[in-house]
Length: 209
Image 1 (cartoon, helix red, strand yellow):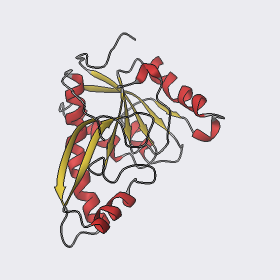
Image 2 (image 1 turned 180 degrees about the vertical axis):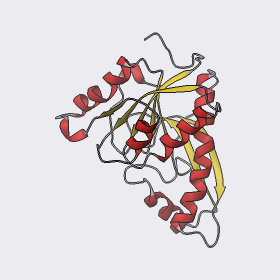
Image 3 (image 1 turned 90 degrees about the vertical axis):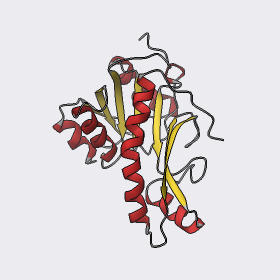
């Protein structure tokens, strides 16, 4: 398709990649339904057929596809299996929502894949830093601030250029679960805001390291 990163588009046509419960997908569906995000989810791709996130897609009548990494003999073939359906669907952007697989980004999708990470990158990022592990590490470090980071995805874990961040306080009596809940509340506003900025052609990403 003729879309180029930085070009204003409305509505923003997206594919969402999931690996689990689909809470990020559910939030985006809700924001779109409430006209708080001018986007259309054309496709949901899951790395497993057994995740709850697919239920949200089915309830919203969004086409779904299962692309397990184990079915692809090589990273290049996994990338092709993941991104070719996105090309066919004509999406502007691929949105990772709790997607836990490492998939190489093809050249035509550079600056067209985004992710949200539940910490303030470049801190508490990289391989193995996902979900509860992130919040445990934040608490163990004694950090007084945490938050979330929306960033473009490159071929390293949690490394691509940052689009925006939102901070939350770390409280003295926090547990990984209470901190995770506070960060997720921030994520629910940060991700749609980042997508609105991308759709408006107003993103000026800066390096995460």
